[in-house]
Image (cartoon, rainbow, N blue to C red):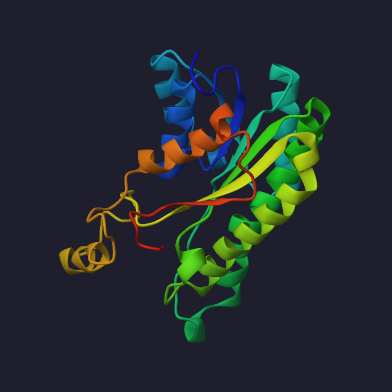
Length: 246
């Protein structure tokens, strides 16, 4: 039996990068994965999981749309009878210096990254409370801990997720529901592939381990927090950043 055998697991933002890695690793560890993304963009990851012998279904959902999220949750409970794990991973950036930042870009980032986690977490809680078991894991960022010029909207949303998780952890601990946060550092995804050699060198100079992280580094931390090995871990922030923030 693997670490997540039989656990019905919703992963938002599952179509690429960290979300895709979380979905595929959770499936490899025995989870039944609901790969959630906008506009059916997670079709490829669902097929990848099935080809590897895992169990997965697609959920086309916008995490900022409460009605869409509630419908997804109802469908999952109807099909599988329960929801064991929620991974709040969906997130976006709209980078700009504050003096030039449009309010629209502030609102969009906060709505997706922070309010989206609120909507999804609230939607799954009824099922988790009823079954007296649940794992909610939210993917924040090292930027939410240390800040980054040009990302005040993103940093605010990611810092907000930490406070959100710690508060929720206190609310639901008596129901055997744990709530934790993973804060990735600089991870090799399509968002970082186009950086210049000089920028990459500068980034690496800030990482004691001397390399960028891989999406599976984050996925491993998430799956640990979703497993029985982390049954006594709640309200915690697990940094996956190569020592960038200590």
